[in-house]
Image (cartoon, rainbow, N blue to C red; front, side):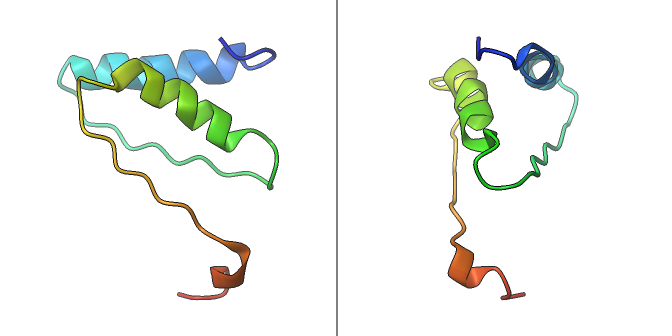
Length: 67
């Protein structure tokens, strides 16, 4: 569990449980740089590795203005 992120981790755990139960879900993480979005995604992928295929992408600041 991530320190100070109990609510966020619980929400991610619920997303995983819902999908395992057959319910479709979409997850969007938004926030300023450095607030821990990648750490939360790491928590999520740690739970599902080996079960599902995970594809990830990384945006860079120079692409911010591109549509």
